[in-house]
Length: 329
Image 1 (cartoon, rainbow, N blue to C red):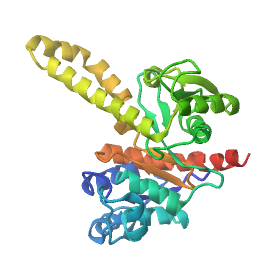
Image 2 (cartoon, one colour):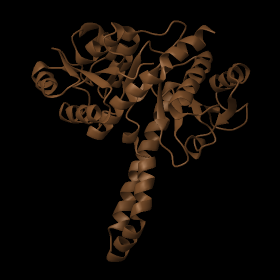
Image 3 (cartoon, helix red, strand yellow):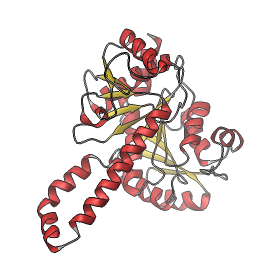
Image 4 (cartoon, rainbow, N blue to C red):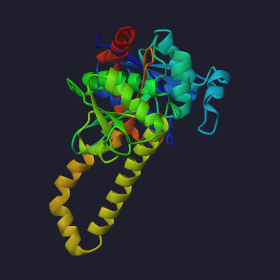
């Protein structure tokens, strides 16, 4: 895999776009000298930025897909939107990957309909690295497929295991099925059927993973349907936000607690770094013919930078090619 990589970026993606997107792209270009960016968005936004930055090309677009629009319909109708054009650049080979912090549904639809599925992949799945003090865990699916068949989870496990090996460097990732108990007979009919298939077909399957196991570290990969995965992920993110907010309030409540906070500052900063979702950058849509990485809608410039860099790392690792080979086998 060549070191030089071109990533198309949605300049309109996110709650704070385009300002934070431009800042994040600028930081990514400065950090990775072999990275080039095709910035997609309104001419008045992308052209001045591209003119002022080496290794950045502007691709002017005239349409925008908002968060409120029906994803698949918007992708079909708005052919000149920044999301559709960015994905089309990957399909046509001008870019090797696409990154956006815009509408997740639209990114998933464009990734599937425009970039296209790898032959043999039943359903592309959205995977994310769950930040944990123990170790990052790949959670898949987290929203692409709300309704699943048990056999889909076998493919999710195979794709997510490849991702864990190439991105996290885990030689033999242990796979768990998100469920309500450790025993094989626990869970819904869907969960029981999925467990039986995973046990039969996935060599590195380690059994059921309860909700508390996602961040404890016994598994490297946890698979589930997209509805359950999304609820799980948002619960983890929300809980972390509330706990750190309350902890900050307590530590700032008196002189004594402020002194204690100063003593713990280094340790707390390290802990926050381990569970900071902005450090992960974005979630890849596994099973696409190229890299399609989706960031948080609330992404700041640092998260955008990390998302663009994560997109380049995904391309360089050859994850899509390895998934294609595994599916063919």
